[in-house]
Image (cartoon, rainbow, N blue to C red):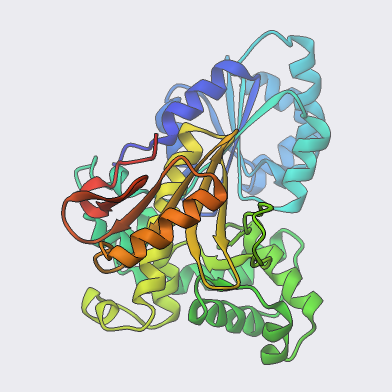
Length: 386
């Protein structure tokens, strides 16, 4: 087993709220995290037919008789009546914390039920796939190259990631989306995912995607919403400041897990990845996602952006913590070029960043310009800007 960084965040929320919701993609490890964190708490999977029938008929009674003193409810959105019962039980003893742990894959119905029924009563933890620092902690030790190639889903790391992702996508399209009331053409969704893979990390042009797929701009946006709500796709918004420059206003869009990216592009080994044109975009995704996953757990209110001018100056990731900003540029090769240092120094001044770091695959660290530092990311994969 691997230790999850999210475990500490989960315990903090458990002490603050009567209920906690763990959101995340299917198979990301929500159930494992819940049961390892609270081994003595009763567990109910509401997708199991007999339990779903019992909770549908009398949710309050079923919750009360099992919550001794707490209860884990997996796939709680399967029984909508549960949320009203939870609200009543929580309000009857509002001062009690850590009573109910809910697990679910993000979807409109679940988020709506939580926001409408349990607002102010529930803390929310978004569970991401593994980071590099997490996979070093278990008996099945993996390297950063394993996580880069295979992605961060537990079962994808344990076996053939390509076979696992193919099975995952079939289940996702044929079972998961219809189960949550989303109608999507399986062939069109697969084609769209493949197009996203080929344009990984590029600026979103929904009209161009629609023309290539033979559908409308609005259909593309609807499918992107579905993919983002189910944690497969990320839209990274641009950062705006009034700096007197023409700035890019379209978001970047990318597949969040590099294992999925490589599967869709038929990349099955590090040798194939090292010679593939997507290598740079894949490395950028891998580093940005690893940084984001850890930052969100340590500082849940951080915001993430990229910055690009019409003239081509760019910062791959801006982390905004309140009034402070930190900029990151990701390079697949060595990022010690003097011209790059000068460009990034000016970009950092434009966005008023506290510093800018180049994360690359080379060894060691070195300052390049005032406020600009290069870091070899593989040996500094626990690092976050301070």
